[in-house]
Image (cartoon, rainbow, N blue to C red; front, side):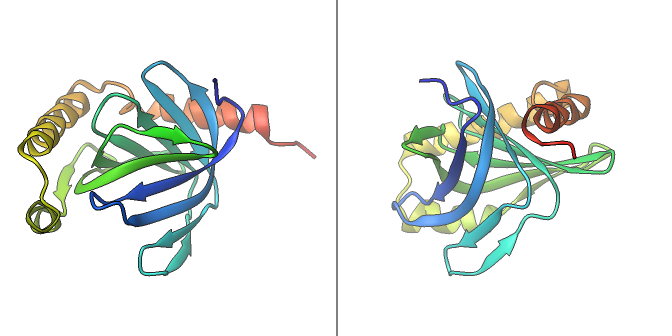
Length: 177
């Protein structure tokens, strides 16, 4: 089934199956063999602890179906910031896209600076949630792969392409009054 044009929810889980974070909606703009592109504007987000907030800027989500990562490109004026979750491959279950968040994140700032985030959280959960050696290897490989993708400016780390996807969403799915 192709999900293009459908609004779906986004749910991030932890390794133990507990819901970590949920976004109210995203529109599936592209459904490709290896990835999905969702667009989200003013989504409400609920955290594991019940805290609620709304996204501030439009975002282009890229959920990979076979790779251990997903990317959120946050569009603010002409700049793009990327937040990369080191996570299980995504899957669609009913009206929801789901993945397991494995703590490590990489932030790519406008201008090209990167920062690896949440290493302490990863170490804590790798032990307490008993990540297998296979999962730890997949996650380490994913971190290296993400940095290589960023350095080579491979999809989805192409600002002009992220703006183009958002503009396609605006043209196809919003009404002009």
